[in-house]
Length: 393
Image (cartoon, rainbow, N blue to C red; front, side, top):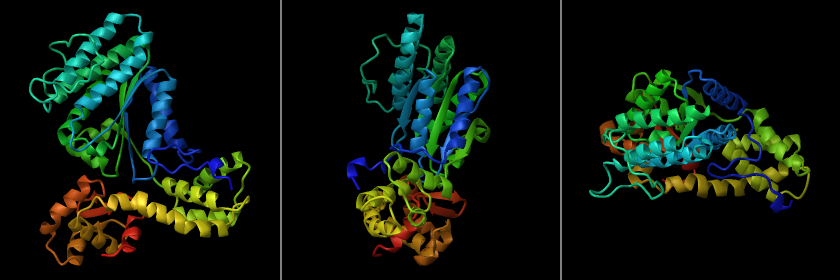
Protein backbone atom coordinates (compact mmCIF):
# COMPACT_ATOMS: atom_id res chain seq x y z
CA UNK A 1 0.00 0.00 0.00
CA UNK A 2 1.25 3.48 -0.87
CA UNK A 3 1.95 5.33 2.43
CA UNK A 4 1.67 8.67 0.66
CA UNK A 5 -1.99 7.92 -0.08
CA UNK A 6 -2.68 6.82 3.51
CA UNK A 7 -5.82 8.79 4.47
CA UNK A 8 -5.79 8.19 8.22
CA UNK A 9 -4.69 10.96 10.56
CA UNK A 10 -4.00 10.19 14.23
CA UNK A 11 -3.04 13.49 15.81
CA UNK A 12 -3.93 15.84 18.66
CA UNK A 13 -6.96 17.77 17.46
CA UNK A 14 -6.29 16.79 13.84
CA UNK A 15 -9.49 16.36 11.88
CA UNK A 16 -9.93 12.79 10.61
CA UNK A 17 -10.67 12.32 6.92
CA UNK A 18 -14.21 11.28 7.84
CA UNK A 19 -15.90 12.87 10.87
CA UNK A 20 -18.11 9.89 11.62
CA UNK A 21 -20.67 9.47 14.37
CA UNK A 22 -21.01 13.15 15.31
CA UNK A 23 -24.11 14.11 13.34
CA UNK A 24 -26.18 14.72 16.48
CA UNK A 25 -23.67 17.22 17.91
CA UNK A 26 -23.28 18.99 14.56
CA UNK A 27 -27.05 19.33 14.25
CA UNK A 28 -27.28 20.67 17.81
CA UNK A 29 -24.73 23.36 17.06
CA UNK A 30 -26.43 24.21 13.78
CA UNK A 31 -29.60 24.86 15.78
CA UNK A 32 -27.66 27.06 18.22
CA UNK A 33 -26.24 29.13 15.36
CA UNK A 34 -29.62 29.51 13.68
CA UNK A 35 -31.44 30.48 16.87
CA UNK A 36 -28.84 33.09 17.79
CA UNK A 37 -28.95 34.48 14.24
CA UNK A 38 -32.72 34.92 14.60
CA UNK A 39 -32.40 36.68 17.93
CA UNK A 40 -33.79 33.74 19.89
CA UNK A 41 -32.41 33.00 23.38
CA UNK A 42 -29.92 30.13 23.37
CA UNK A 43 -27.51 28.57 25.84
CA UNK A 44 -23.78 28.30 25.40
CA UNK A 45 -22.47 24.77 24.82
CA UNK A 46 -20.06 22.43 26.60
CA UNK A 47 -18.54 19.21 25.18
CA UNK A 48 -17.18 16.64 27.64
CA UNK A 49 -15.43 13.31 27.25
CA UNK A 50 -12.24 11.34 27.71
CA UNK A 51 -9.07 12.18 25.83
CA UNK A 52 -8.97 10.83 22.30
CA UNK A 53 -12.73 10.96 21.63
CA UNK A 54 -12.46 13.98 19.33
CA UNK A 55 -13.57 16.94 21.46
CA UNK A 56 -10.99 19.32 19.96
CA UNK A 57 -11.82 18.15 16.44
CA UNK A 58 -15.50 18.85 17.09
CA UNK A 59 -14.66 22.24 18.63
CA UNK A 60 -12.68 23.20 15.53
CA UNK A 61 -15.53 21.99 13.31
CA UNK A 62 -17.97 24.17 15.25
CA UNK A 63 -15.62 27.11 14.76
CA UNK A 64 -15.59 26.51 11.00
CA UNK A 65 -19.40 26.33 10.97
CA UNK A 66 -19.61 29.70 12.75
CA UNK A 67 -17.09 31.27 10.35
CA UNK A 68 -19.12 30.04 7.37
CA UNK A 69 -22.02 32.08 8.76
CA UNK A 70 -19.69 35.11 8.91
CA UNK A 71 -19.58 35.11 12.70
CA UNK A 72 -16.65 36.52 14.61
CA UNK A 73 -14.73 33.67 16.24
CA UNK A 74 -11.86 33.25 18.66
CA UNK A 75 -10.36 30.21 20.35
CA UNK A 76 -8.24 29.68 23.45
CA UNK A 77 -6.72 26.71 25.26
CA UNK A 78 -7.00 27.06 29.01
CA UNK A 79 -3.99 26.47 31.22
CA UNK A 80 -4.23 25.76 34.96
CA UNK A 81 -1.47 28.23 35.85
CA UNK A 82 -2.79 31.21 33.86
CA UNK A 83 -5.72 33.58 34.08
CA UNK A 84 -7.93 33.60 31.01
CA UNK A 85 -7.89 37.42 30.80
CA UNK A 86 -5.06 37.72 28.31
CA UNK A 87 -6.16 34.70 26.26
CA UNK A 88 -9.77 35.92 26.06
CA UNK A 89 -8.57 39.39 25.07
CA UNK A 90 -6.55 37.96 22.19
CA UNK A 91 -9.45 35.72 21.09
CA UNK A 92 -11.96 38.57 21.17
CA UNK A 93 -9.51 40.71 19.23
CA UNK A 94 -9.46 38.04 16.50
CA UNK A 95 -13.26 37.85 16.51
CA UNK A 96 -13.70 41.60 16.09
CA UNK A 97 -11.05 41.71 13.37
CA UNK A 98 -13.19 39.25 11.41
CA UNK A 99 -16.22 41.52 11.77
CA UNK A 100 -14.59 44.95 11.41
CA UNK A 101 -14.27 45.08 7.58
CA UNK A 102 -18.05 44.63 7.22
CA UNK A 103 -19.05 47.20 9.85
CA UNK A 104 -20.28 50.54 8.47
CA UNK A 105 -19.33 52.55 11.57
CA UNK A 106 -15.55 52.43 12.15
CA UNK A 107 -15.96 54.46 15.33
CA UNK A 108 -18.00 51.62 16.86
CA UNK A 109 -15.12 49.23 16.21
CA UNK A 110 -12.63 51.71 17.66
CA UNK A 111 -14.75 52.18 20.77
CA UNK A 112 -14.84 48.43 21.35
CA UNK A 113 -11.10 48.07 20.74
CA UNK A 114 -10.54 50.75 23.39
CA UNK A 115 -12.61 48.68 25.85
CA UNK A 116 -10.77 45.52 24.82
CA UNK A 117 -7.40 47.16 25.37
CA UNK A 118 -8.48 48.40 28.80
CA UNK A 119 -9.67 44.88 29.66
CA UNK A 120 -6.36 43.32 28.64
CA UNK A 121 -4.23 45.89 30.48
CA UNK A 122 -5.97 45.21 33.81
CA UNK A 123 -4.30 41.83 34.14
CA UNK A 124 -3.37 41.64 37.85
CA UNK A 125 -0.67 39.05 37.12
CA UNK A 126 1.29 41.49 34.96
CA UNK A 127 4.42 42.99 36.45
CA UNK A 128 3.97 46.48 37.85
CA UNK A 129 4.27 49.15 35.19
CA UNK A 130 3.74 46.68 32.34
CA UNK A 131 0.84 44.99 30.60
CA UNK A 132 0.47 41.59 29.01
CA UNK A 133 -1.13 43.11 25.94
CA UNK A 134 0.79 42.52 22.74
CA UNK A 135 0.95 45.30 20.11
CA UNK A 136 -1.83 45.46 17.57
CA UNK A 137 -4.42 47.89 18.94
CA UNK A 138 -3.52 51.49 18.12
CA UNK A 139 -6.49 53.14 19.82
CA UNK A 140 -6.15 54.45 23.40
CA UNK A 141 -7.54 52.30 26.19
CA UNK A 142 -11.00 53.31 27.37
CA UNK A 143 -11.65 54.30 30.94
CA UNK A 144 -14.54 53.14 33.09
CA UNK A 145 -15.46 50.07 31.06
CA UNK A 146 -14.08 46.51 31.55
CA UNK A 147 -11.14 47.94 33.49
CA UNK A 148 -12.12 47.45 37.15
CA UNK A 149 -9.62 44.64 37.70
CA UNK A 150 -12.47 42.37 38.84
CA UNK A 151 -12.65 39.73 36.10
CA UNK A 152 -16.33 38.98 36.66
CA UNK A 153 -17.30 42.62 36.10
CA UNK A 154 -14.80 43.20 33.30
CA UNK A 155 -15.62 40.03 31.35
CA UNK A 156 -19.35 40.70 31.54
CA UNK A 157 -18.90 44.25 30.22
CA UNK A 158 -16.53 43.04 27.49
CA UNK A 159 -18.95 40.36 26.31
CA UNK A 160 -21.92 42.72 26.35
CA UNK A 161 -20.02 45.29 24.25
CA UNK A 162 -18.78 42.64 21.83
CA UNK A 163 -22.31 41.27 21.42
CA UNK A 164 -23.51 44.80 20.65
CA UNK A 165 -21.03 45.10 17.79
CA UNK A 166 -22.15 41.72 16.41
CA UNK A 167 -25.80 42.82 16.66
CA UNK A 168 -25.04 45.74 14.34
CA UNK A 169 -24.13 43.22 11.63
CA UNK A 170 -26.89 40.72 12.34
CA UNK A 171 -24.39 37.99 13.20
CA UNK A 172 -22.90 36.50 16.37
CA UNK A 173 -19.60 35.96 18.14
CA UNK A 174 -18.41 32.58 19.40
CA UNK A 175 -15.60 32.07 21.90
CA UNK A 176 -14.23 28.52 21.89
CA UNK A 177 -12.41 27.25 25.00
CA UNK A 178 -10.47 23.98 24.85
CA UNK A 179 -9.34 22.18 28.04
CA UNK A 180 -12.00 24.17 29.86
CA UNK A 181 -11.57 22.15 33.06
CA UNK A 182 -8.19 23.90 33.47
CA UNK A 183 -9.73 27.37 33.79
CA UNK A 184 -8.94 28.68 37.27
CA UNK A 185 -11.82 28.58 39.77
CA UNK A 186 -12.23 32.36 40.00
CA UNK A 187 -12.14 32.65 36.21
CA UNK A 188 -14.78 29.91 35.83
CA UNK A 189 -17.04 31.94 38.11
CA UNK A 190 -16.45 35.06 36.02
CA UNK A 191 -17.09 33.20 32.79
CA UNK A 192 -20.37 31.76 34.09
CA UNK A 193 -21.50 35.19 35.32
CA UNK A 194 -20.76 36.76 31.92
CA UNK A 195 -22.63 33.98 30.09
CA UNK A 196 -25.54 34.39 32.53
CA UNK A 197 -25.79 38.10 31.72
CA UNK A 198 -25.74 37.37 27.99
CA UNK A 199 -28.45 34.73 28.34
CA UNK A 200 -30.67 37.27 30.08
CA UNK A 201 -30.00 40.11 27.64
CA UNK A 202 -30.14 37.88 24.56
CA UNK A 203 -26.81 39.15 23.23
CA UNK A 204 -25.53 37.16 20.23
CA UNK A 205 -22.36 35.86 21.90
CA UNK A 206 -21.89 32.25 22.95
CA UNK A 207 -19.13 30.33 24.67
CA UNK A 208 -18.40 26.80 23.47
CA UNK A 209 -16.19 24.81 25.81
CA UNK A 210 -14.62 21.36 25.67
CA UNK A 211 -13.14 19.45 28.58
CA UNK A 212 -12.81 16.25 30.56
CA UNK A 213 -15.83 14.41 31.99
CA UNK A 214 -15.72 16.25 35.32
CA UNK A 215 -16.11 19.68 33.66
CA UNK A 216 -19.84 19.94 34.54
CA UNK A 217 -19.00 19.51 38.23
CA UNK A 218 -16.29 22.19 37.93
CA UNK A 219 -18.86 24.59 36.49
CA UNK A 220 -21.59 23.74 39.02
CA UNK A 221 -19.14 24.21 41.91
CA UNK A 222 -18.56 27.72 40.62
CA UNK A 223 -22.15 28.84 40.01
CA UNK A 224 -25.22 26.91 41.07
CA UNK A 225 -27.07 27.92 37.91
CA UNK A 226 -24.41 26.58 35.53
CA UNK A 227 -26.36 23.37 34.84
CA UNK A 228 -29.07 25.58 33.30
CA UNK A 229 -26.60 27.93 31.66
CA UNK A 230 -24.98 25.49 29.23
CA UNK A 231 -26.17 22.85 26.80
CA UNK A 232 -24.05 19.79 27.69
CA UNK A 233 -23.03 17.15 25.13
CA UNK A 234 -21.07 14.11 26.26
CA UNK A 235 -18.76 12.81 23.53
CA UNK A 236 -18.07 9.09 23.74
CA UNK A 237 -16.60 6.28 21.67
CA UNK A 238 -18.06 5.55 18.24
CA UNK A 239 -20.59 2.77 17.77
CA UNK A 240 -19.71 -0.05 15.41
CA UNK A 241 -21.37 1.48 12.33
CA UNK A 242 -19.66 4.86 12.83
CA UNK A 243 -16.24 3.30 13.50
CA UNK A 244 -16.51 1.21 10.34
CA UNK A 245 -17.58 4.26 8.34
CA UNK A 246 -14.57 6.23 9.65
CA UNK A 247 -12.34 3.54 8.11
CA UNK A 248 -14.28 2.60 4.98
CA UNK A 249 -15.17 6.04 3.58
CA UNK A 250 -11.59 7.41 3.32
CA UNK A 251 -10.34 4.10 1.92
CA UNK A 252 -13.04 3.99 -0.75
CA UNK A 253 -11.93 7.41 -1.99
CA UNK A 254 -8.52 5.81 -2.60
CA UNK A 255 -10.01 2.71 -4.23
CA UNK A 256 -9.22 0.45 -1.26
CA UNK A 257 -11.51 -1.97 0.59
CA UNK A 258 -11.54 -3.85 3.91
CA UNK A 259 -12.74 -7.39 4.47
CA UNK A 260 -15.43 -7.82 7.13
CA UNK A 261 -12.94 -9.77 9.26
CA UNK A 262 -10.49 -6.86 9.07
CA UNK A 263 -13.17 -4.44 10.27
CA UNK A 264 -14.02 -6.84 13.12
CA UNK A 265 -10.38 -6.96 14.19
CA UNK A 266 -9.95 -3.19 13.94
CA UNK A 267 -13.04 -2.51 16.05
CA UNK A 268 -11.84 -4.95 18.69
CA UNK A 269 -8.44 -3.25 18.80
CA UNK A 270 -9.64 0.38 18.72
CA UNK A 271 -12.73 -0.18 20.90
CA UNK A 272 -14.49 2.61 19.03
CA UNK A 273 -12.26 5.44 20.30
CA UNK A 274 -11.71 7.84 17.38
CA UNK A 275 -8.00 8.40 18.04
CA UNK A 276 -7.37 4.64 18.18
CA UNK A 277 -9.42 4.09 15.02
CA UNK A 278 -7.10 6.47 13.19
CA UNK A 279 -3.95 5.05 14.80
CA UNK A 280 -4.71 1.42 13.96
CA UNK A 281 -6.06 2.38 10.54
CA UNK A 282 -2.90 4.25 9.63
CA UNK A 283 -0.45 1.47 10.59
CA UNK A 284 -2.64 -1.25 9.04
CA UNK A 285 -2.73 0.67 5.74
CA UNK A 286 1.06 1.09 5.70
CA UNK A 287 1.75 -2.61 6.33
CA UNK A 288 -1.01 -4.09 4.13
CA UNK A 289 0.15 -5.69 0.88
CA UNK A 290 -2.85 -4.53 -1.11
CA UNK A 291 -6.62 -4.26 -1.33
CA UNK A 292 -8.70 -5.63 0.25
CA UNK A 293 -7.10 -5.12 3.65
CA UNK A 294 -7.47 -8.35 5.63
CA UNK A 295 -7.57 -9.48 9.25
CA UNK A 296 -4.03 -10.81 8.81
CA UNK A 297 -2.92 -7.27 7.92
CA UNK A 298 -4.55 -6.01 11.12
CA UNK A 299 -2.86 -8.69 13.23
CA UNK A 300 0.48 -7.81 11.67
CA UNK A 301 -0.05 -4.09 12.29
CA UNK A 302 -1.43 -4.29 15.84
CA UNK A 303 1.93 -4.61 17.68
CA UNK A 304 3.38 -1.61 15.82
CA UNK A 305 0.26 0.48 16.42
CA UNK A 306 0.31 -0.44 20.12
CA UNK A 307 4.01 0.44 20.33
CA UNK A 308 3.33 3.88 18.81
CA UNK A 309 0.44 4.47 21.23
CA UNK A 310 2.61 3.33 24.14
CA UNK A 311 5.13 6.06 23.35
CA UNK A 312 3.07 8.94 22.01
CA UNK A 313 -0.36 8.58 23.58
CA UNK A 314 0.21 6.75 26.85
CA UNK A 315 3.94 7.07 27.52
CA UNK A 316 4.14 10.85 27.21
CA UNK A 317 1.49 11.18 29.93
CA UNK A 318 3.03 8.50 32.14
CA UNK A 319 6.41 10.27 32.02
CA UNK A 320 4.84 13.44 33.45
CA UNK A 321 3.95 11.66 36.69
CA UNK A 322 6.21 11.52 39.73
CA UNK A 323 7.12 8.11 41.27
CA UNK A 324 4.44 8.57 43.95
CA UNK A 325 1.85 9.46 41.31
CA UNK A 326 2.85 6.43 39.23
CA UNK A 327 2.37 4.18 42.27
CA UNK A 328 -1.10 5.66 42.70
CA UNK A 329 -2.00 5.03 39.06
CA UNK A 330 -0.62 1.48 39.15
CA UNK A 331 -2.80 0.80 42.19
CA UNK A 332 -5.83 2.16 40.30
CA UNK A 333 -5.03 -0.04 37.29
CA UNK A 334 -4.64 -3.14 39.48
CA UNK A 335 -8.22 -2.70 40.75
CA UNK A 336 -9.84 -2.38 37.31
CA UNK A 337 -10.72 -0.15 34.39
CA UNK A 338 -13.98 1.25 35.74
CA UNK A 339 -14.03 4.21 38.17
CA UNK A 340 -12.47 2.98 41.42
CA UNK A 341 -12.95 4.09 45.01
CA UNK A 342 -10.15 6.16 46.55
CA UNK A 343 -10.47 3.95 49.65
CA UNK A 344 -9.67 0.88 47.50
CA UNK A 345 -6.57 2.59 46.11
CA UNK A 346 -5.39 3.38 49.65
CA UNK A 347 -6.01 -0.24 50.66
CA UNK A 348 -4.01 -1.51 47.66
CA UNK A 349 -1.10 0.71 48.68
CA UNK A 350 -1.57 -0.07 52.40
CA UNK A 351 -1.75 3.64 53.12
CA UNK A 352 -4.23 5.96 54.77
CA UNK A 353 -6.45 7.77 52.22
CA UNK A 354 -5.47 11.17 53.64
CA UNK A 355 -1.78 10.49 53.00
CA UNK A 356 -2.52 9.90 49.30
CA UNK A 357 -4.48 13.11 48.76
CA UNK A 358 -1.46 15.09 47.43
CA UNK A 359 -0.73 12.46 44.76
CA UNK A 360 -4.40 12.21 43.79
CA UNK A 361 -4.86 15.99 43.60
CA UNK A 362 -1.68 16.40 41.55
CA UNK A 363 -2.82 13.73 39.07
CA UNK A 364 -6.14 15.53 38.70
CA UNK A 365 -4.36 18.84 38.04
CA UNK A 366 -2.16 17.15 35.44
CA UNK A 367 -5.27 15.83 33.71
CA UNK A 368 -4.34 12.17 34.14
CA UNK A 369 -7.29 11.21 36.35
CA UNK A 370 -10.59 12.82 37.23
CA UNK A 371 -13.12 12.51 40.00
CA UNK A 372 -16.00 10.60 38.41
CA UNK A 373 -18.15 11.30 41.48
CA UNK A 374 -17.55 11.73 45.17
CA UNK A 375 -15.09 9.08 46.36
CA UNK A 376 -14.51 7.65 42.86
CA UNK A 377 -11.69 8.33 40.41
CA UNK A 378 -10.99 7.23 36.85
CA UNK A 379 -8.38 7.70 34.14
CA UNK A 380 -8.92 10.50 31.63
CA UNK A 381 -7.29 8.37 28.91
CA UNK A 382 -9.08 5.29 27.57
CA UNK A 383 -7.19 1.99 27.97
CA UNK A 384 -4.66 3.66 30.28
CA UNK A 385 -5.20 0.95 32.89
CA UNK A 386 -4.33 -1.72 30.32
CA UNK A 387 -1.16 0.20 29.43
CA UNK A 388 -0.15 0.50 33.08
CA UNK A 389 -0.66 -3.17 33.78
CA UNK A 390 1.91 -3.88 31.06
CA UNK A 391 4.49 -1.59 32.71
CA UNK A 392 6.87 -2.66 35.49
CA UNK A 393 5.80 -1.34 38.88
